[in-house]
Image (cartoon, rainbow, N blue to C red; front, side, top):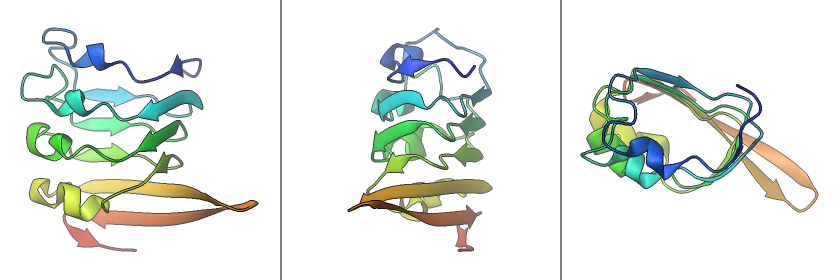
Amino acid sequence: MHDLQGTLPNSWADNGAFPALRALYLNRNWRLSGPLPANWGSKTSSLNKLEVLALQGCNLTGTLPVSWSSNMPLLSVLDLNYNYLSGEPLCSVFLPLQLCSVAMRLIIAQTSAAHCHQAHIRCGVSNG
């Protein structure tokens, strides 16, 4: 799916929307924008069984919702490479989960150039 546009729907977290979803790959949907929905990490979210969430190469903005770390207990792979996210470092948000693999590149626009900062965390230990 590379033709999605708009924002990530809050309704995907509605109870019963995706009762058995384990992996969601939405990479390279550059017309997806806006924040990561905090309610995806709510206690009643249908996405709380996710093990893999790949959102690489979208135009997502804002911060990583803290609710994701406490209410997505099975999430072991989170790919947020090449988005426009800010806020708390991944290790401080997801350290309680001991994610096996978390990768994120923040693209920060400064004046006329874009700079990339890569953080790669494996099971709570920073490798970059």
